[in-house]
Image 1: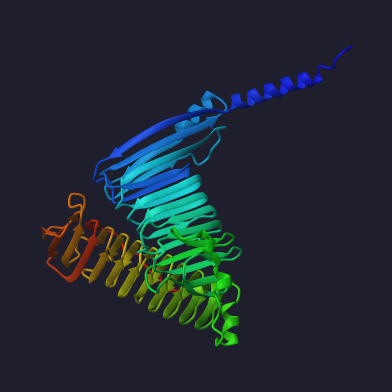
Image 2 (image 1 turned 90 degrees about the horizontal axis):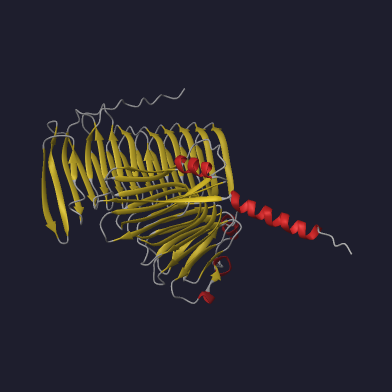
Length: 523
């Protein structure tokens, strides 16, 4: 009797192919460690395209970094090539430390690589993270600002007390507050669930917007829906704003230690008062929409609940008000008033006075020719040019003015302030105030001013006032548990008053010779 050898042969071939497959995937790892001294940084930036990131705040001084570089390839030559082309770089100075993974722009080899970072940092630093893909990004025990931009993966913020901004596309966001929220938080996602855990007696404003998902909580809420967006207060009115937006995911705010069985949908529990007019009810429940207009031949006046608004040119004044959504205006030939309860603002060349305000989101103004006022309850403010007096206020985020030809009054609860005076201005009134961050003032060599600068810090050896100009007198005194560093004097014989105040940060008055930006008149 002859038995077929086909099954045995197939099994042998399969085993051989499996062995070859495993043999083709070689893996190499490299551990890189770096330690910076106690005065290492006020801000830490991590740019890592692929790999996990963990940042933990500590009361210990210094910045400790551990990086694990992993390369996978079919042979040792590929591993060597991948390891050489995957560079871990440590850059920056005591103001900003940059840790980044550098990969070739064109990847031709048969290898793949990733780097996982673990950082121990002083809990007072500001943290900014940029990533494409990671299994997990975790930031814990940080009192400074935290910004995370990511494409795919889980984002965990645990015990972050400073203002925070999270942008992600796919994955999950978990934010655990160990104390009552005291600063604003903004979380934006496309296809991600958002969970926020707070102390059960926390008071804050809550904005939530999801198109396909649900909004649930086990906390007392007073609120109403405006289209797909929910806006209300948790426990009692007042406090910071937590804004959460996801297109396809669910949103949950949970009280720590409370029974999860008490969770209920806000959509089902929020009811409109019976006396509310029917027309108002239908207006509030309109679906979100997008308004796009190349040119408005005259003044532009628009109000909506949930809408993205984009107008290329307004030949007159502009007034835009939304409950939520992005507002983008190009050229406005008059005064511009823009208000959003939640969403970014992008404003171009404003000929008149600008009044821009959002409860959650970044604000960009390219040109404010007559000055005005710009504010956000939580986000970054950037102004490229202002030709008149300008007031800037952020509940939590950096403020930057590239060229100021008018007086500036900038204030943020948590973030850096960077101001550059117009080089043609011999003097101008400037006020800058941050409760947690640095201030950099850039002026021309001939700029005259009466300087009054103060730093209040618990780290007197790390924070300081620096000036590229002579003529300042600096004094130190103890104020409770903190040290106040006070600098006064005149620059170039004196001029308008310049008042600078930074808590837990540095002040730097920089002598910068720059060319003025030419703002062209529209056709």
